[in-house]
Length: 148
Length: 116
Image: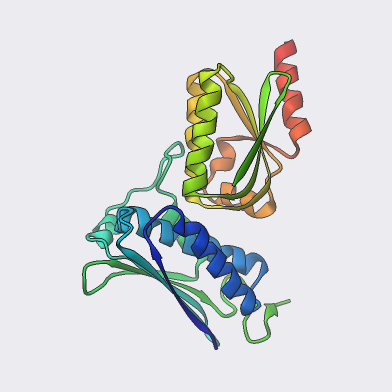
């Protein structure tokens, strides 16, 4: 089963490159439709948080995306090199309706079957997002198709 | 993301295509800011060609809406693809924005308001 590793500088332009890589990888694994949409939104949110809040758009700091597809499902790890990311996650408050930000983590939690945040050894944040085989998106990765 | 603009009876119609995210959201906000500076405060966004949106893109739309409302203007949206509509509903922004199925339907409401 395939796994992928990508690294990006923490700039606004990296988001487009990351999505290109992500869509290409998912297409290779024949993951499409609503599951592809769910993964792309969840990974995009974690990636944007890593670039903006984690690495503070410092282009010398990389954001790592690891993607693994196996019988259990799909796991995406997004890792930044910022400091205090876990505290920011723990102290976040619900976004108000007219707030311009604050919806990213809620979207990740909505789309993913599970989402974990943990601090890395060098103080960065690792977000692990799982989409389980036959989880909430009812996708059978072995058969490569949606369940009836 | 690309933004095409045309004037339809005093309504600026912006047709967005591509990905609406952090970088392109900033572009959209800048474009709307320039419209407002020219006293164009009736703005319609056709999202039919938006193939991806995330919370940064939503944030840009909220920002644009607040700017337009601050100027006593009006912002409408139309032609949301199903996955874009879904994200509006998850975030409950579907209750905040004026969303129409088609551009024609949205533009007709401006005419109705103007003739009252």
